[in-house]
Amino acid sequence: MAEPRFFCDDHLWRLARWLRAAGIDTAWERAIEDGLLVERARAEERTVLTLDRGIAARRNVDVRLLPSHDPVEQLRFLCEAYGLDPLARAFTRCPMCNGVLTEAAPDQVEVPERVRSCCDRFWQCDGCGRTYWHGDHVRHMRARFETIRGGDAGRPPGPTSPERPSRPAR
Image (tube, rainbow, N blue to C red; front, side, top):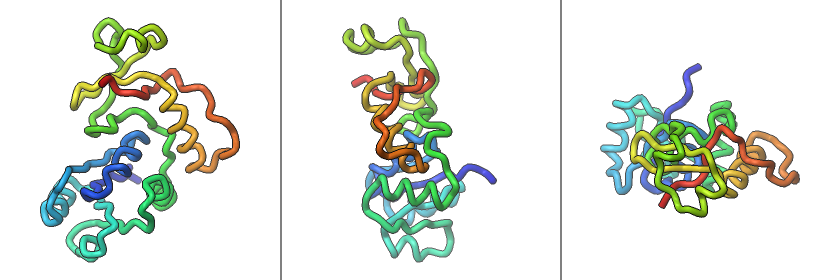
């Protein structure tokens, strides 16, 4: 079965970022008109994710009506519905633009000196050019992903994976 590709309606920007952090190809566009959203999703072979019953009622595109307004619960619902593991490709896409992250040499990225002093691996987005590195944020997200996939919710977050990035350069 092919990995699903999603297009979040304009109200689901937080879900789009969570899905992208999980490495799931997810489009989102600010203030996109419903008709254009449906047209683009159909052209790009994406499933529209929405809380809008009007969009969900459309018959000319694959649509998934979400049962919750909470982005983490929405992610949990989608992982269960599509059999997705949020850790399988976590931190391989840019949460801002959906671009693919590739490892970058430390001497080729601009990051704050405090980051350079504690991190030696960096990733850059092939779409927007943002630079990412490991930080506390990835541990918190990884713990959420572990909980979503059925991990031990009571266990404190473990160390970050050496293969995956976490924080963008500002």
